[in-house]
Length: 240
Image (cartoon, rainbow, N blue to C red; front, side):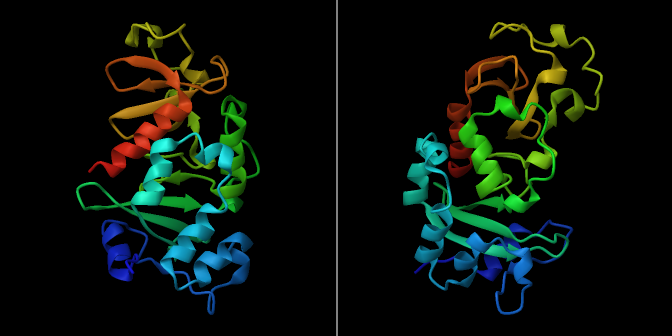
């Protein structure tokens, strides 16, 4: 039975500066560091059991809005492992998929205990099912860069103005785009929830309807449904 092994784990983190990760060992690890719901994933020696145990924690009203990713879960998911990263006090849950071209594609699910004491800016602009996922399942679910192809950890979510190092607002913001998609939204009221660095940004805002999102591809802005945009971003990663 195929599983995600130590050699593959080290290959994923080959360019990571935080040290060599390893699979979490329940017999030697500090149990207080591990969410109770993760114990069965960490303890199991069976990839199928690990996969089922991991996704049993996902709220159905969130996963059900991501049909392409949900299909990939059934068709391309290889394994789910709990890993220890030397420079992080909190274990990560790593989901390993086989991409269409045969490469390995991984997502990191962060412990809900890392959500933080405060909500990200304009958190209520996210649909309730997304909020539930981030609070109770994974406080961030993204590629190994911790921000792309999924949901950025809430502790790193910020307005686009802050993201671009213009906390008082991006200069000449109104004229950077044609804004054919919708009314102009202040850069201080757009929260970047995910994307692909230097390629795509996905924003929510209290000035949009809950469930809507603005996509920035560097050329134009488009208004769409958050779940559709998120599902597409996640599918792109599997098409390599």
